[in-house]
Image (cartoon, rainbow, N blue to C red; front, top):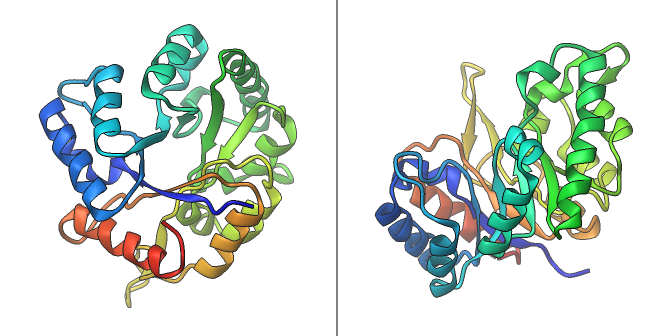
Length: 259
């Protein structure tokens, strides 16, 4: 299988992506680090950048837009617009950062979400766009005998409902990133790479890839063997310059043969 491609999750540098001018500069910076792809998230919060304009910027910097994070409501209520926007971006995967609150109450509401999201994903598929679901740690809470992740895996349509497992949040929820990537084989085209570290006072924190405690050889091998195409690097908070954190992560991944 082809090796997955490393991408920069632009949520990491969201404070430098609020207006189009800053988005352009941030794309230039991540391309200079060596990244060949980005995932859009948290960008244009003050002034959005039109999809076609962002595509031009990324094309000029040799960047592919591998995935997005948008609202589930937009996907459900206006799938035609989502399809149009993603084609304008040259982007295959439309992602959501989690389920809306009303679906998070109990096992029945999570099952309802799995079914409804599968229907939305099927509509997007008609336009050539795929759906991916990004987890946090609350998907490892149990409702009855199943975790939410198990509910989503078992109750969704495997043809259309794909996953975007986040390595940090899987571990934070008590799961094994390697085991979950393998469980999701063929259903995780995008995997969020995020490292997990612990302070002496037991506080957990985000850190650069390879600087924390996760099993990166196992994670990367699982991604490669399970059909993952894109591996966006994300760090929700950074100790200093987030572009430097993206660089450290990229260099460590490059040292392991991934770029």
